[in-house]
Amino acid sequence: MKPLLAWVGLVAVTGLAGAASPNVFSVHDLDRDGTLSRAEYEALRAHCAERRGERCKAALLPFATLDADQDGRIDEAELLDALGHRHRGGRGW
Amino acid sequence: MDIASRLGRRRFLKFCAVTASLLALPPGAARLLAEGLRAGRRLPVIWLSFQACTGCTESLTRSAAPSMESLLFEWLSLDYHHTLQAASGEAAEAAREATLRAHAGELLLVVDGSVPTALAGACSTIAGEDNLSLLRRCVEAAQAVLAVGTCAAFGGLPAAAPNPTGALGVGEMMERGLVPRRPLVNLPGCPPIPEVMSAALAHRVVFGGFPPLDDNGRPLAFYGETVHERCSRRGHFEAGRFAKTFDDDGARTGWCLLELGCKGPLTRNACSSVRWNGVGNPVESGHPCLGCAEPGFWDRGGFYQALAPAALPVADKKATTVERGARVYDSQCVYCHDADPAQLRALPEQVPELLRSDRIRAHRFPLEEDDLRALVDYLKEKR
Ligand code: SF4
Image (cartoon, rainbow over all chains, first blue to last red; front, side, top):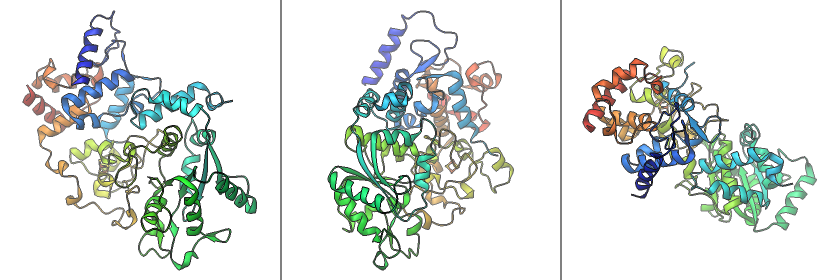
């Protein structure tokens, strides 16, 4: 239950935060800055495990894979690139 | 000058963060790793190569920046490695013997290659000593052993039937009492992924032990899932799209390689998640997974022979449309939407049109029609 409570708590806190970035792409972007930080991504994983089970958590790509430029944050382009690549099902030749 | 200064602080901290994340260590572990590695305790290491192709060493030294071998050399005292060391002949052997004497009981032994046990060890000798005798002496002095590559872990190619040299992996030799028992971690792969080697070593240096292992002695963080589970071609597997030959349209488009012999569903390794040098893996390059990280992989049927349907994971055969929709939600939607699909504002039947409309910024990659239908069925059920 703890991860869920922490997640709800964070949502509540960020409800008071300032103006959101126009680049916000995820409900898990709790500080609304347009990127997912490592902490936000960990909260997302915990939330998924809590609500959807370990299979969902296991299906999530590792933070290091999504954060292609390794700046400690996942932006929309990085997420789209990783999901698009996975979805396209490899490159073929 | 400490390791962080030599490598550059940013590169060093990035390495620690990535390693902690790959090992699935708890929050704060990256800082502990950084502190531990900075502390400068250089672990004495002897690296023995037996019946091997030197691919494991090549893999380690060819890894991308930050170069793994440079990091390793900073926190290890690699006292003997007959491929990489400058000394040769008697001087090299003398260095190894000096390390065995000076660091008995505290050194880390890294082994690549399998050990021939037939014909009284005559198949492979180093400086006149057979491999088994050398290994036995070194394990005796070791605090722990790292078996790097499939040959050292499980025997690999040299142990393929009919195994004329009586080749064995280190673990089996311990079990048979041919060498003393020591804590052992297996890092199979032909060759193993460099990040896997450096993460296991970093863990040993900093925390003094090995990360949690599976039944085959492999770190769960890297070998806990199959190649298939995170494969980039998985969408095509789910949709039943299989390349039939290496030059058909399916192969050109990137379809699933199961019918061309892919062993990904039965192979536990991190190729799909920790890609080689961050670039790709065999399956992404168009070649089926050979199953190289599994025991006995050379003797498990032809590389290009399709797995029998009975060998595939049961869940995949039984997947219903709704289950498939749940997987789409698990693997795509949860990154941006609530984990509970009932929270979506759009009605399920509106979803296909919304996704195709290109109006929503984050949906600029097309979902396959079958996936889309499955997703709608799943969303309806969850309403
Ligand atoms: S069978 Fe092989 S190519 Fe197909 S999805 Fe699984 S791992 Fe990928």
